[in-house]
Image (tube, rainbow, N blue to C red; front, side):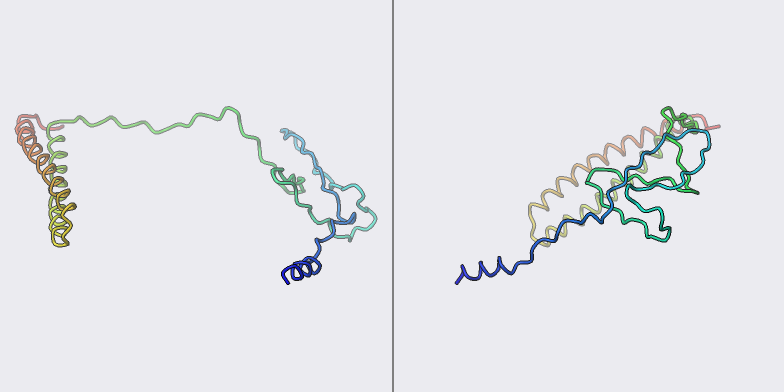
Length: 178
């Protein structure tokens, strides 16, 4: 039974289509001349071998797909603009000058340290809320991890507060900025 189905399948299976006939035009090969600075007259037309020139109303040949990896060459037609080739040595780009860095005075360091301590304090509050939520869920490992992270952040905050006191004393003794 299986053998009969296999034989019928092979016999009734559609046969592959015939290879393209000789009516299909051969692929065109067009050579592109190098671009010069002198203007040239546009090419009249590109003719394919075996193409009829007596019938001007005949339709143009259909393009034949190229093999993979080959570039398609298109002839330059009237009104087409040919791009100029890339320059091997492009002009260097002129950048705007970088402004001079402002002096890192004690006032500047004090403002930056205050901002860092504010952000770190905000993170500690968020971590404390996350630790409480993990404790409510019963996730003891996450609660321990967050507790350790909070302790590290609080240690950094203590160091920053000591630094803030030093910087505020230095900023008081600093001359005013011009």
